[in-house]
Length: 53
Image 1 (cartoon, rainbow, N blue to C red):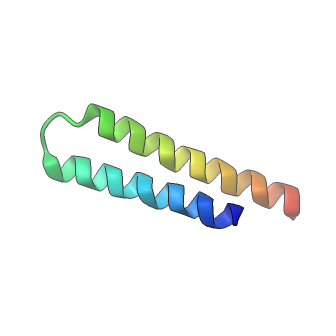
Image 2: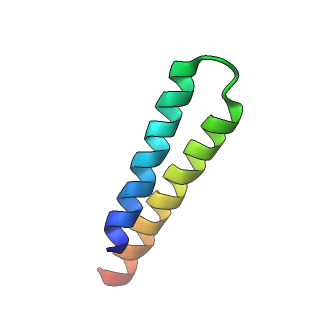
């Protein structure tokens, strides 16, 4: 379940970044939030794999 939630965060982050770039206007907040979602999901995956081998 944790791994699925982590991948969901990464996917949502990517979708948010793509959507923000596609909108083309400003988009600083969308890029920041998307990057944070990807970072959070990636760190959850990293920690999960380190703890469970």
